Length: 115
Image (cartoon, rainbow, N blue to C red; front, top):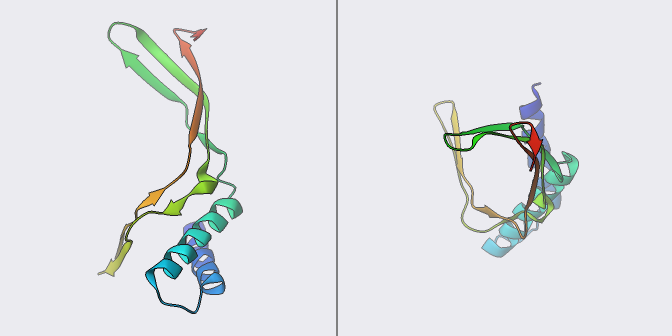
């Protein structure tokens, strides 16, 4: 089983295990948010490393962004309606999510000098 299928299975099982017996939109939202937060914790996504970036500016030269990270993902929650569809072997999802505060950190170098 591929890793992405294992992750999907974990989220499905967590949703079933932690779901409420009610069918209101609020209980679904709370269950979905709970599953998101458990997944974030299980996959150790807070903090999450970000890839190095190279930005080229015509006037200022090249800026390197190194050792990036984002923190605050553990506050993720559902903010709107979720639409999930599977048709003809294609899976698509439109999911509204929000967080409280995200912190993004990078070390920036301008032509080899830290800025």
